[in-house]
Each structure stands twice: as structure tokens, then as C-alpha cells.
Length: 328
Image 1: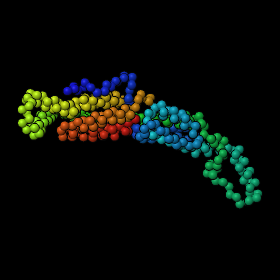
Image 2: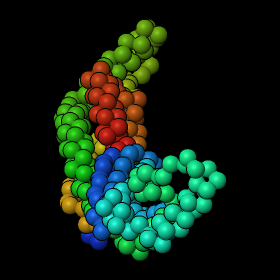
Image 3: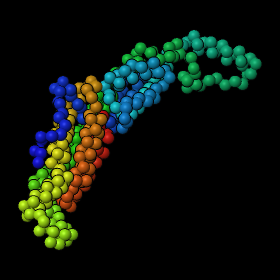
């Protein structure tokens, strides 16, 4: 019988590769105050196989899309991220910057119009305030508002990453609990495996002897008891090899070790830089391998106890796989 840990995949853990366990679902927002007004920025992130960025920017701030994209791409690995930016201008600032020359020009035009249509009413102050082009500095300052946008984006990104890390740790905790359940099942099957194999050999030997006696009454006169016992033992051993699940248990233990490594190394705080590798993709592959071993365990099961153990393993692995779908 193969010893536990003697077979299975060999995982290499590189000290310079740190995998951050972070959820892809989070929210971050920030604002920046300028003399002209206030800018607000929101980041919303949900699950996605890749990094998908969707921008909702006012036309006046469309020029910041490229630096925003560079910032987010450098710090996020996966997820569908919506970036929403809005701004409001200070009324007092705007009113103080009404262009006197423009007002004089408008008054002259109003007088000219009244000479033909005397009943034209003068415009209200709010109409003047919202009249396109009425201010000397009507357009937003691209440099000032762009810098404010990037400042708010950095603050919102920090908030988003902190939220991703907290949710990631919660998901990692749930997977650790499932992993402990998998380990208990593997230990139970391993403990009872020698007795299961011995029971099956005895049952098969008895069944083979009964079958031979039924098919060839008196046939044992042509074969010695030692030879018959050897043949029965060979058949029983071949069957025992087919139901020996030691290698599957060994590989499951190796997968559990790698799982704990990923979940433990991923518990730190976000560093602000994109982490090497993708924990979510590695976990997904790992759970595929674990599920394959559970399937093989079930197909080789020689007792109802092992069959139930395989079903319980598949359930726990599926629960972990569902949680990993939200890991970046």
C-alpha cells in the first residue's frame, strides 16, 4: 500500500511570490474639493474572469480616462469595475466670474431687440447664470480638475482594496473550515482503509470458493488446497488493488497543503501593487484537481462508507469552489 504523502503533485512555494486573497466584490468612493467646485468618484467592483473597466465620465473630464485606466490596471487583477465621476460647481464662484463685457454685449442686444419687439422681458439672474459662454472662465481647468480626479481615484482605490481584502479574508475563512472537513474525511478513510481492504479480501475469497464449489462439485480433487488458496489469494489481491484508494488520499492531502498555503499567504494587507499571480485562478484549478480525486475515490469505493465519504468530499469541494469564484 502506498504511504500517505509518498505520491501526488509536488507544489513549489516561492518566497518572492505573494498571493493576495481578495474578493472581487467591493466599493470605494472619495471626493476632492476645488475652488471651482467638488468632484466625486465611485468605484464598484463585481466578479469577472478578467479585468473589465467601464467608465462613466462627464465630457469635461474625459481626458482623465487614460490615467485612470493605467492606475486601476496596475493595481487590480480581475473584476468588472465601474468608474463613475461627477462634479458640481460652486454657485458663488460661478456668479463672481460673470463676464462684465459679456453682460454689456447682452444688454446692447436686448435693447436692439426691444426697438423691434418692445415687450421682450429681461432675462432672470438664474438664466444668466446658466447661459452658455457667459463667464470669462466657463470651461473647467483640465489640469486642476484632472489632478483632483486622480487624487480622489487613489483614495477610492485604497478603500476598494481594503474592502476586497476584508471580504477575501471572510471567504478564506469559510474555505479553511471546508478544508478542515475534507481533512477529517481523509483521516477517517485512511484509518479504516486497512480493515476495509482485509474485509474485502475475505469476502471475495469466500465468494470465489463458493462459486468454484458450485460450478465444479468435487473438482477440488484435481487441485491441491495450497494451489487453490494461492489462486484465490491472487484474485483477492487484484481486487484489493482496484479498490485501494491510498494514492487518492495522498494526493488529496497534498492538495490540502497547497490550499492552506494559498489561504495563509493571502491574509496580509493590500500593498497597493498588483500581486504576482491570481489566487482565484489557482484555487479554481486546485479544486478541479481535488474534485477529480474525489470522483476516483467514489469510483473505487468498495464499501458504502467510502462512497458516502466521496460524496461528502465532493460537497465540501464544491462549496469551496463557489467561494473561490469571487476571489481575485
